[in-house]
Image (cartoon, rainbow, N blue to C red; front, side, top):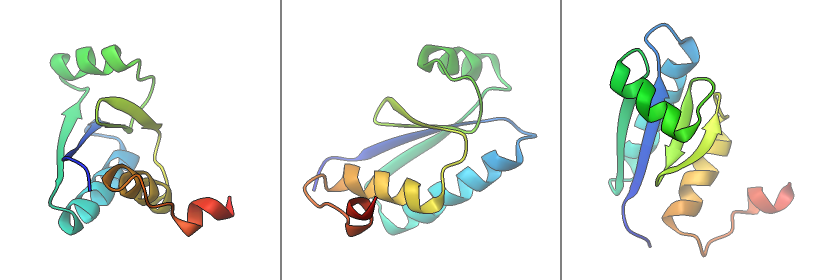
Length: 99
């Protein structure tokens, strides 16, 4: 296993897809206590500034361990595969191999 995973989800108040992204993050963090996450609202100046540093053109956007991984809402399967890979990079998911 690796160190803690840090997830940053960029959102806005009115974005319906952002709410779904937050649900996915809450679901996976309930299963994996080694995940640390935060929500960054681009409705606030500091959030917009942080989003600009990542080059984020739209929300929701999800960064994992400081790297922008998703722009837009991923499927729950795509998100879970990415996080599981970060948690244990030596395990290759059979779902990944099918693609």
